[in-house]
Length: 385
Ligand SMILES: [Fe+2]
Image 1: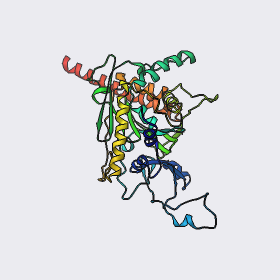
Image 2: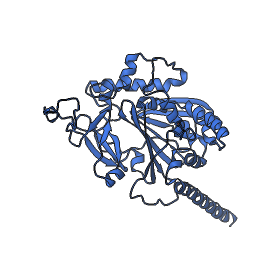
Image 3: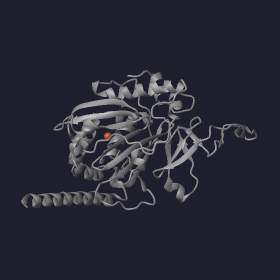
């Protein structure tokens, strides 16, 4: 449980607030490269600020027209760069740190970006990222319930019982681990796990699907949610992508109710229905919420670092070609079937590329099988001879 003051501090994004100052030490995606190819100018809003290209103050509607106050003030100039089909902005103090070249943004594969804007503060989304148990209930049990009512098959990968969860702080944030029923600490879900990438991302994946879940604080109660996915099955050639495709994912159905027939639709329902800003003064954290407590402490510690003039977690100043993040390959101990579950029952189903992506994974799987059979055949011949 937090006091009203602590909740206020944790959810601020404005300049001059401890959290706002911390968040201004990072780069954020503010547009798709595709958008600037279509039209060269795009206004952007980030951390509650609307910015021009050189820090010029664009408008002061509350000031009197005849004064030149607007021309006399100038914000810290923003910087913009392109990486992985996204346009990234930095609006913090100079000099800007490096724009992190995380693995998903630079790796080979077929890119696919789903996105939407959500009417809630980004911290409640990040808190969900350190709650492994929700997978079993929100994407397991609840999915089965909806499937029975709406007449579809719920994906079996998500409903496995959690035997154990664990959290480790590391250089980019928090690694989240789990052991599901039937698996052990030797399996990927525990041995490797996957990270919350501080302060606004989560890296997930499995079965040759690699994803960064991005939560950009546009302002205090609006978050741009992006699913930056790279489909990278081995043993198959990737089609070229002159433009990275993006598409809006649905939050509500035609009745205005949350659409909960896919994985991220269920997540968004859980985030948004907490209200624009979760009231943490009435919460009751249990033993399974240890990840949430750890994340809040991490925010607090890094606010203090910034206040002392130091760089917070994940801010660095030497160029790195590629930053590999730990992420399990055999997700939920479900093997290759996870790829198909993922495309059929997660946000990728709304992708204009959904069928092509499924074919890509199936083709890769067949190629690998044919390769293995060929090898077994050769070994058999060698043994026979
Ligand atoms: Fe989820």
